[in-house]
Image (cartoon, rainbow, N blue to C red):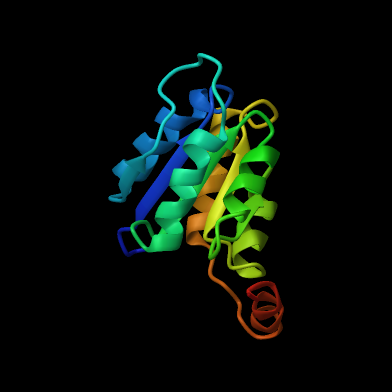
Length: 148
């Protein structure tokens, strides 16, 4: 389990909004600080407006890591991955969350609220936060991603 309190950025569109409050509540109960970049309702909106600032907070070091939410999580991951220094993986279960940290050292995850129910989303976040990057052969592969 991650013992160090983290600063976690979160950004969502209207489709991911139902997962935002439960995830924030869990993170805060674990002692983490949350930077909430919105949105604040289920009114239709454009996910890049909220996901990009959440990812930029990770890239700048304002946040240690980020969580972006949407309908499928795919568009949100694409936006986050456009920000230099962010590695965002779409997570749909605990296994994918664990490996996105252990093998990809993802500093951001995307979760789709339509296929992932709240209880599973909370388990995904916990599994990802508790996982540790394995380094080794994975470090070499990460270095091939991080090119200018």
